[in-house]
Image 1 (cartoon, rainbow, N blue to C red):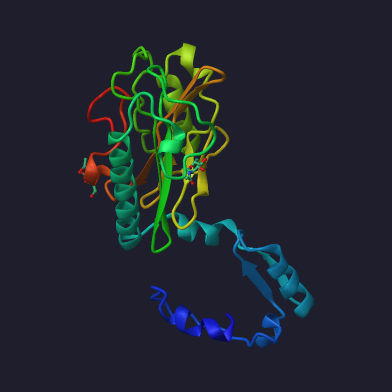
Image 2: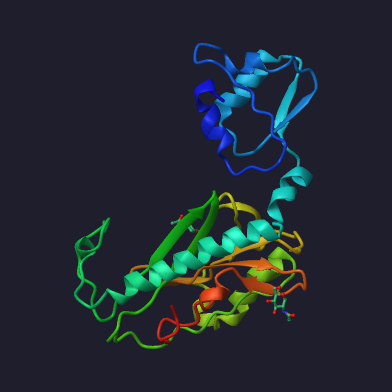
Length: 268
Ligand SMILES: *[C@@H]1O[C@H](CO)[C@@H](O)[C@H](O)[C@H]1NC(C)=O
Ligand SMILES: *[C@@H]1O[C@H](CO)[C@@H](O)[C@H](O)[C@H]1NC(C)=O
């Protein structure tokens, strides 16, 4: 890191024995490292100019993305990380509920802070989609609700969507598709979800092509949805994790847990 960032780095909530390499503003960062000849594993999300810098400075080194086994270490979260994720997700859900309380038929986007897109007023047959994220010490939440507004006239034709079971990622992706009656299954265009934690998108992906076995500590977004272009879309999204007893648990269960239907009063 730049020398002037030293104080900020010491304040970071990192408990492991990390050795910080510091450089002055007029120094080349890579040249502050000891000579490297072996293999350097980098995080897959690293910016490419850093990989280029390492390769140019250490021509005898091989700089490659860390193998799956190393990446998988961060996929499964220990208890401390789960607590942070629970707090972030619960706070997000509570915030969505507060905003929804202040919405009504006739409200315009412009009536809300940061409203954007169109200035159309919400009518009695509109859904309001909240797709929200928050971060607590770097740990992310991602919660989506698509509630009807009070006095909505939308017919109750969209089935409840249930939490996916523990199993192979591919099978987990199939479960809600089977659950949705055939008429709606074709409108479920998206994969069911994916892992998350420090990043909003992490492995494993919950899709038809993924044979990864979900294990204790895996955290993932469960985001079934029905998208009928030009007409209506409903997406429900909750973050979940696999507990020690192999149950799938919602991270926001402390404040009421998952969405079940846009019409139930406890839905949010
Ligand atoms: C939440 O996750 C969904 C699905 O991965 C993504 O499309 C969306 O952008 C995320 N929301 C935010 C606010 O980051
Ligand atoms: C599994 O573990 C979770 C988290 O500790 C707990 O809340 C849940 O009740 C347990 N479920 C069963 C079926 O024991």
